[in-house]
Length: 221
Image 1 (tube, helix red, strand yellow):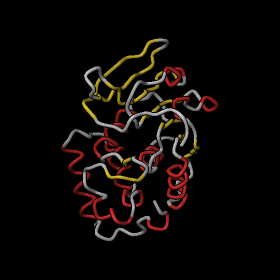
Image 2: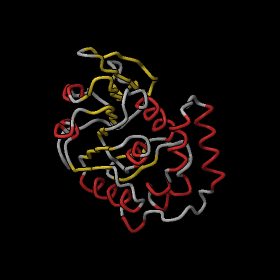
Image 3: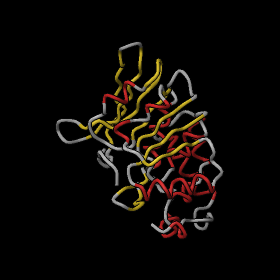
Image 4: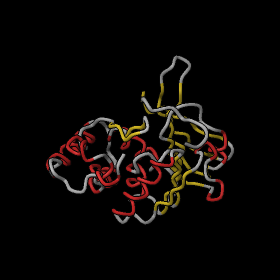
């Protein structure tokens, strides 16, 4: 993706279109006004290629290059709302920066957001977008997300934006009263979004519904 072709204006994505998306999210079960406010204030069209900016406020996933996608707004809202159940909102970890959109939403709700991305090109573009939007409380790096970010642990919330087996190390990096939100692959081949809440050495598990994410992969690209 060419950074020079990132959308720089609203264009066809009018304020009315953005408000309509927020109303759809509310109708589909997103009840936390803090989450809806954060998504209202985060310009999704700035996180997609200019050619797709007119579709930025559709409730659909869009390609961002390298076989990756920006998640549909409903899924971003679901994951963010689930993360808000954490006892504290000081530090969040995101596994899979992608376009940077999810990190930008979290940055409006958590004091600090740490985000890892295994694909170098995506990490660089996301950093450019966040810097351009003056989002200064997101700390990103090109790294293998399966390792988490041990130097910054423990985290109040961990959000995993790719599906597969959830690495044990992420549970270890979750603080007391913290929540881990991740798509978990089921034996039948499907995925479901799970929220784990840490209580001492135990993790309460809650299913939030069926989802579909790109696979969680190991190593750098």
